Image (tube, rainbow, N blue to C red; front, side, top):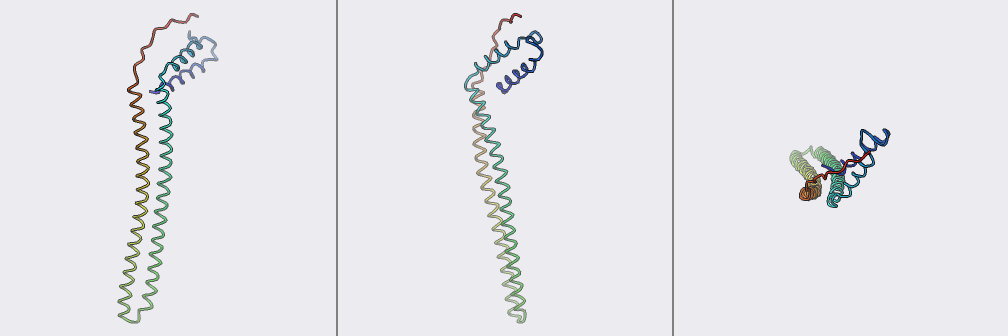
Length: 182
C-alpha cells in the first residue's frame, strides 16, 4: 500500500471540498490538513527513501524496457539485413555459376566439372548464408541476455527494497484525539 499516495489523495479530497465553506459535513478541513501534515512528518525516513527508490526502480525498468525494445528491433533489422545480403550474395554466386556452366557446355567432361563446381559454390553460399544468419541471431541473443541481466539486477533491487519496507513496517496504533470544537 502506498501511504504517501493515499495521503495525497486524502489531501486532494479536502481541497475539493473547499467550495462548500470552512466546515463540511461537520469536519474542519484545516484541522484535517494539519493532521495529514503531522502524519507525513512522522513517517519514517526509510519509508520516504523506499518510496523514492521504488519510483526510481520503475523509471529504470521503463527505461530498460524501452532499451530492450529498441535493441531487439535493431537486432532484427540487422539480422534481416545480413540475411538479405547473404541471399543476394548467394544469388550472385549462382548467376556466376550459371554463366560459367553455359560457357563449358560444349565439352561433357567440362560440363561434369562445371556442374560439380556450381553445386559446390551453391552449397558454400548456402553455408555462408546460414552462418551469417546464425551470427546475427547470436548477436541478438547476446544483447537480450545482457539486457536480461540488467533487468534482473533492477528486479533484485526492487525486491530488496520491498523486503526492507516489510521488515520496517510496524503497525501504527492510532492515538485517540480530542474532537475539535466548532
